[in-house]
Image (cartoon, rainbow, N blue to C red; front, side, top):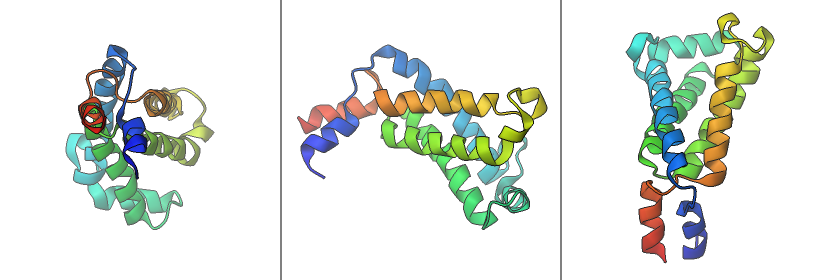
Amino acid sequence: MNTQRLHKLFASHAGTAALLLRVPVGIILVAHGAQKLFGWFGGHGLAGTAEWMTSIGLQPGLLMALLAGGAEFFGGLALILGLLTRPAALVSAVTMVVAIFSVHISNGLFMANGGYEFALTLLAATAALTLQGGGRFALDNLIAGKLQ
């Protein structure tokens, strides 16, 4: 990948608003990923998540649990730091699309019924970050500055 393309990947003119979006969304994603991978915060850990994913038809369950948990946990960390924001946000957005259509869509919109409103909100936020990047206060901008 040439320097110009890397610069486009890292550079962002989104300003401070991106920080206000990145950090809370990143925290939420880290927490949900930690539930899936490590059993933290009342989660079932990797084995429990893999078993559940297999039960809803996402197979192989262990791989799907690793992919979902890894996307949320490590993608969330990247969003908090503003490091590789666009790829991390894109992977998180795809994870939310899978969650919406494999788990929540049949339950309607509202979260109280197991619906997709929360995943849709995270999808909207991560899609926006994919397009706009990490903003002024992201490590991505430091990297972009070195690439010029």
